[in-house]
Amino acid sequence: MNVSDMIDLVPWIALITAVSIGGWVLTTWLRIKHGYPLENSWGMAIHPSNSRENSERIKLLTNENAQLRAEIGSLKDRLETVERIVTDKPSKLAREIDALSIENGGHA
Image 1 (cartoon, rainbow, N blue to C red):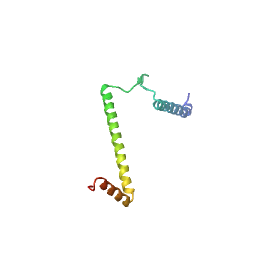
Image 2: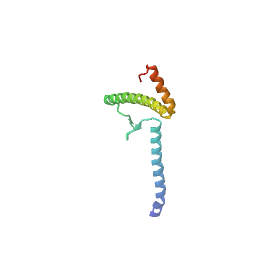
Image 3: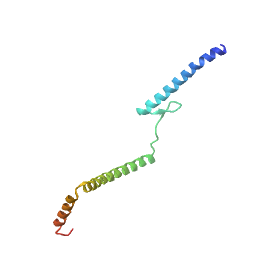
Image 4: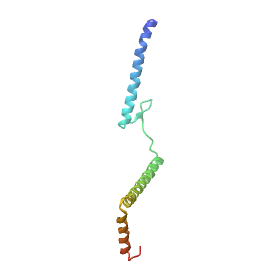
């Protein structure tokens, strides 16, 4: 095999290498997308570690998330009330305040 024959093989070798790497990237992406475990260089599945510390942290974050969602819900309700007050006509607001003062016996 002479040098010119080897030079003719270089594009084919580059193409085969590119297709192989592209296939590896595609299969890895599909595994991640569909939830299959990844593998190490020995073919053994790599699973995320589930230590006691991680479990406790997940519980704390879940509780904090629930508390924050409840707080956001109450803030949304308060914001709706403020928006209603701001967008209502001033005369309607004045009538509602007067009605409240009358219901409380004239002491607002």
